[in-house]
Structures are given as structure tokens and as C-alpha cells.
Image (cartoon, rainbow, N blue to C red; front, side, top):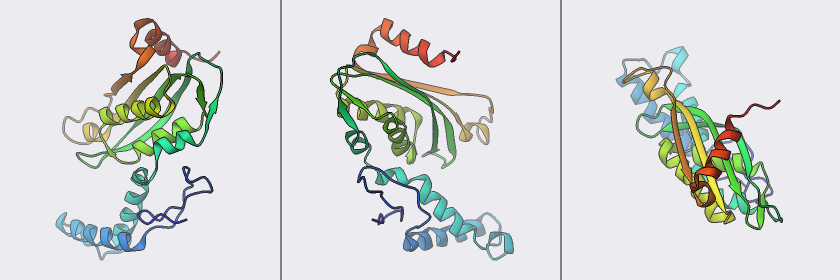
Length: 212
């Protein structure tokens, strides 16, 4: 079924999604018309050959980069929850993150490291990166993104604890403003058992360890 806002299609699982090259043409046209004016205001000629299709390309790119608004992160988790008698830490690290800073509409990107301690239920491992995508593919700030991922996992799975660490480079700092190309921003959020120093230290050790 085609999503009314983005033109992307949902797969057979109503909580999942598959990438599609179909877009909502009405919104593409509307966004593209604004970008034609923006190009003019920047001193460019939107009618020249290299820019003829740029407004449409930008409109489609923005629809894809923000398609997380149309995903249900909690639903993604609920679609693959299983009862299981396992109570040790589950860690998924080095999850690629791509998002857009809501202040300047420039990308920030990096990695997320996530852990939870099951309390009667586990979740399909692929769903955790999907939750990251569902929140990161929106206009964001890294601090809110970190909390949203933590709260979604905690509220949906009801585990004994959740840990989230995100490390990102922000182009709004590298390309403009302070122009520091090598700076990395790290944010963290914890619940339950991860509030305790011993458990949190184990998580941090696991996400920094290298496989043999």
C-alpha cells in the first residue's frame, strides 16, 4: 500500500517497510517549486542545464530522508517480540545513523550502540536498527534522537534496562559555523539496570571491544 505522504510502500508486515522509488508527486511538485525560487535567490539560474531537474531531485531526496515520520517504531518492535527466558545483556553496536539537523537541514551521521536486558521478552535483532532508522530519518537533534530510541525500547519491551550511546559528526559544525571537521558528538541515555555503574561499565566495555 502506498503511503500518502512519502509515496513509499509498506511490505506485508504493516510495521515494516521497503524502499521504493515511487513518491507523492503532488508533494514533489510543491517542494520542487519552492526550490526553484531558492535557487534564484542564491543567484543561480534554475533553467540552466545542470539545474533543470535539481528541484525535483531535492524534493524526492527530502521525502526519503524524512520518511521516518511515517514509520511506527513501537510497532516495529511489537512485530517481532518473543517470549524467552533470557536475562543477560543483549548488545547491538555500530548501527549506522544518518539524520538531518533540524536547525540547518544539514546531515549528521555516525553510529549507535544499543543494549537491553530482557525481562521475559526478546526482540528480533534487525528491529533495533529499524527503530534507529525510524527516528533518525526525521529532522532531529542528536540529544532527542538518543532519548527517543531509549524510550521506545523501554516502553515497548519493558526490559530490565536500556542503554543507548550515539556518536556522530555534524556537518553543521564542519561545513559552517565553527568549522571543526574532526569533532565528534557523543550522547547517552540509560534506564533501569544501566543506571548502575557496574552494568553501565560492562556495556561500555562491550561496545568498545574488538572482535578477536
